[in-house]
Length: 256
Image 1: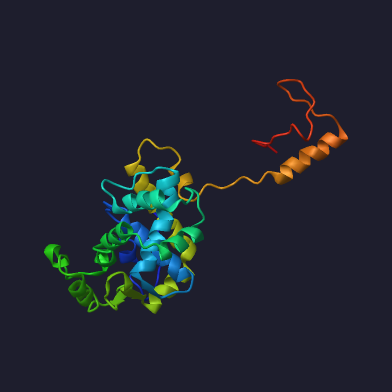
Image 2 (image 1 turned 120 degrees about the horizontal axis):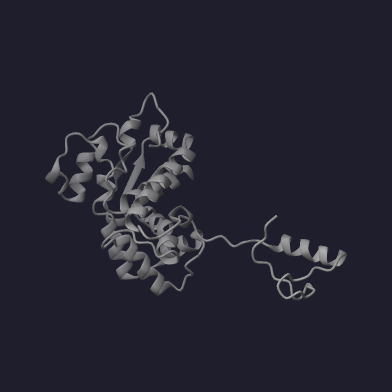
């Protein structure tokens, strides 16, 4: 099990329990979105921008690699719907996906985004909350946010409770910890995400290679290398025993 860096002032042991017993994907994508935004320098974040970040981070896993995020998973359903209506590629750049989501007015998209905010913004921090049990979590979002705001030592607190414009603000101690240990935290999130996806996709090989968009292989330098070789001496195709030229040369795999 991966150990998170110790802090003299923060309860890192409880942080390490955030992603325990995940039954849906929302929790890990929500926390990953928070880490991404804090690393970029932000400490006050709206539900809207965090949900957009979640969609963009899950885009390739769902649309390109066809991974299952869970039974009746709203995030997975949302990505499929956006893909159907937006015309974006399965390997679209994250910045373009985020730009599209900021401008998207589709009602179904808005409704499903709202659904993703019902529980995870509040229940993610359950390891830090000792007083809540069972049904105490099942109250209105407004009341739940107010009760959580009375807790001490949470990672973040709530303000401006207003649908998708609701904001959370990260405690400065935690934002500093996240920035200082960002690489370890990102690997920890990836490790937990791989474990989660492997449970949901037991017959899919190479889950760890499917967390990021497919990379275009840049073979221009290799192509130029072989063209230079051909100018020095003939190069034969080992299968057809034909002399290769720049016009017939095609690079697929290159072993140095």
